[in-house]
Image 1 (cartoon, helix red, strand yellow):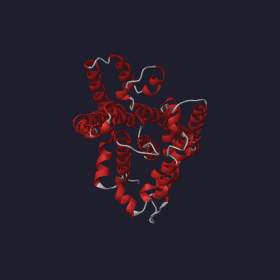
Image 2 (cartoon, rainbow, N blue to C red; image 1 turned 60 degrees about the vertical axis):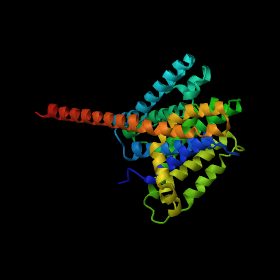
Image 3 (cartoon, rainbow, N blue to C red; image 1 turned 30 degrees about the horizontal axis):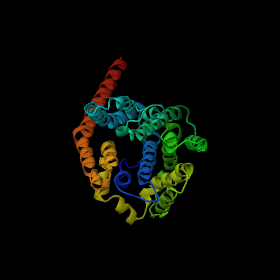
Image 4 (cartoon, one colour; image 1 turned 60 degrees about the horizontal axis):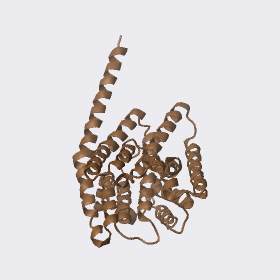
Length: 339
């Protein structure tokens, strides 16, 4: 039986959100740390979804409900707060963007309509949820027909990478190309494929390996500004995907670092912080100067408040409600089946 929770993955997630914060509120040269942090999120999501859907084979209804209870309460709370802010500041034109964020279509909406800066970051959430739908459909077909998963995931990832290459060659910018699910889903698919190829066998190894550290370093090197986007989000992402798949077998020094209390805590807080950092980042960009960098502190505080006031309570409530309903349905089915 595979472990359902690995603290080292919480640390990986903590690194991802901290890189996003550094990329937005500090200065980095030679590499966009915010984009790199998002890529760490994506490959981790692919790895986790592969375990949930293809290894544990969680029922798809339960999978969808758990995803919705995880994502939507905090997103709705954030979007409502941004709506109130827009109405109070005379920015009603942004309301359609907030609707696109709530419907998880923003990563295509922004291609044709005016952007809504306070929810610009929801493009990444759109990519994740669209990719989960795709992985859920693949899981449904795989459970029914029993085909080989790895070639399918690898082929779809390759097609998405090729799509990005062609779109970039035709003159598309980063946001016009790599915010689209039909391109950036490659990152999540590569995370899933790498886990199926490397991750499960690494959990049974007893000898630590430096391979995850080398792959992580390679992924970092392939994400510097000098590297073109098609390389970043193909070979660079593949390196990161293999790194997160094998990270439980990393040497003790790396695993101890990733399981340190600050990283694990930021990993647990990451979703709500990611939602709330954006409006503070927008304000930071408008203000400029060193004082604006301090806006990272209220951004973190608002994220933590959202976590404890909205995300966790609503997630527990919705999951319990689903479990009760599922239990009643099972009981009713048994009673109907009893002669």
